[in-house]
Length: 204
Image 1 (tube, rainbow, N blue to C red):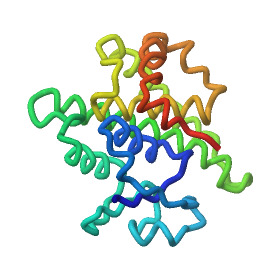
Image 2: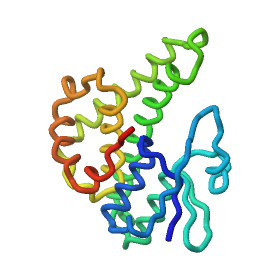
Image 3: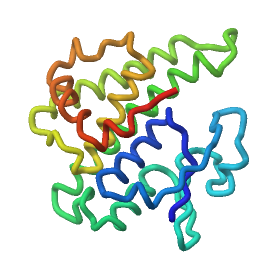
Image 4: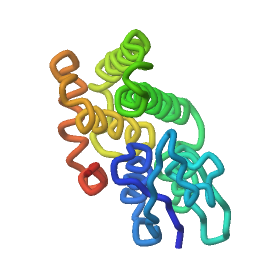
């Protein structure tokens, strides 16, 4: 069994769980409750990750793994190397798409923390809008790539993009990102209905 510090609202945890679902490994994961927070440290998570961030996993061999990129690569190895191409252009495209999705998520989470974590008198709206500029740039790139993307989560880069768009729906519904990015919206509408994505949608 793998033990995973888990938060149902974390898009990085969703990325790990969607990977596990696609690979048929969910029955090997024991989910451990956590209260990850950027300021109020949860020392339970620090047993697996000194940064006290989720996801954090311990393998059945006792190896401690973090963050989502490392955990997903480990799960892919356990599941037969189905989600990360071993070589060639396909590998670099997969990894670049993963970086694009992770970057979108990083910006979105920072924008959210600016309002819900930072005291109001210390909030910096210019900085927050800079994060939204990154989000919009990532959405524009996803929209450009969308017509050529597989609509099945058979690639870690695509899983990451899907989790990023799902996080925008979950935390930033007011953005209405579909209006300006219709090709990304069309891709995501089908992609997000795959069981690996359906079973891992965030909930409060």
